[in-house]
Amino acid sequence: MSGEGPVQVLVVHVWLHRREVEHLEIYETIAGLVRAAEAEGSTVCATDGRVLYGTRWDEDGQLVYVPCGGVLAALRRRWDVAHVHMILPHVHLLLAVALRLRGTRVVLTPMSMLGNDFASGSWFRTRAPAFRRFKPYGVRVLRVAWRAVTTAYVVQSREEALQARLPVGRCSFVPLPAPRTALADALVDDVSAGLPGGADGPLAFVSRLDSWRKGIDRICGWLDACADVLPRPAVVLYAADEGQPRPSRLGPLHDEGLLHWDQDSRGAALVAELLRSRAVVLLSRWDGQPRVLREAALLGLPTISTRSSHFEEVVRALGSGVIVDDADDPAQVQAAFEAVATQRRDPAAARKLFARESVGRSVLLALRAVAQGRPESTVDHYTATRWTEVPG
Image 1 (cartoon, rainbow, N blue to C red):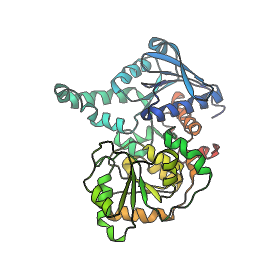
Image 2: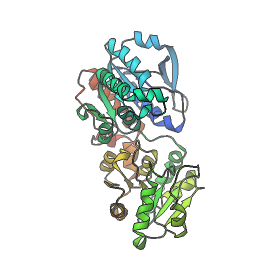
Image 3: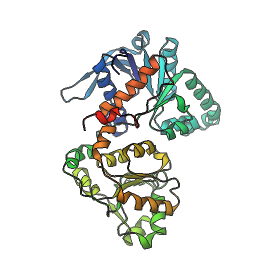
Image 4: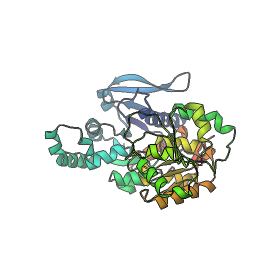
């Protein structure tokens, strides 16, 4: 990136100061972008639509936002490119239009599910009935308006681009960085101690017990269909009983020994349990790039997932894991179960792929291409060699 000149970047994202799990990935992405920008003299500021913030680092190395004006100050300044994280499409659209009128090029990150929500109209599901009747027309107008102001896109996978109905030729492919969660923090020291194998262990599922979206019913269907050839247990669910909808088959499968439900393991204890697993499985019908799959990769565990998890590029880059085309077919799930037993476990590669600094560098490269009027110059973080150069 050196020698191509610094750029002035404005990041647009609501709830910049929140540190809840749902916002950690965006926080880490922006932090990596700021660090990469500092290394070459570029400037990154941020706005939540109300306040303009500069950035600094605290004594713990965490990114801190420093108020330096209102949203009008953000509009008065000249930016080479604005990077919009689409949480609230209508709010961000107004700001994006204003920036475009000022000559700023706009890059949109639709963020998987939200992009699909917006493109298909499901973002309007919770609105009043009278507004829902307007939905098809409102979505069409918003989509056309976004296309008019957006120069290029940063997405996690080609599947995301497809779901959000984006032109793939104008998309850069960059994963979300590893989030700082309790599990991610707990695994850092454990991985360096070595990996105990786990080829003969069960699959592990670590997520909400959502029977449809997370595909728990698909796991149950596979266990039922292949019970005669499966070990006991074949699957361990690590999930608290939080009242999520779940298949009635969980109880009988537990009684048969095919499935074990662990509601208590957390933190380092959960890491120790996961390291005995052969893989982590998430047969999602609809998802973002799941946090649990990134944490599994950081442990060196291969993953069994679907294209709807937006993890296909990650599986290809790491050289381990299986993407199931039809997760409703027990035979395909069984084939994936058998395949992962022989796959390598390489947590160091995953650390480099999901490193904050590495992801931030890719984002900056994509933003600078747009700022220089080269929106067709896409970045593919998964096939680039630079992420392998980041210290593990």
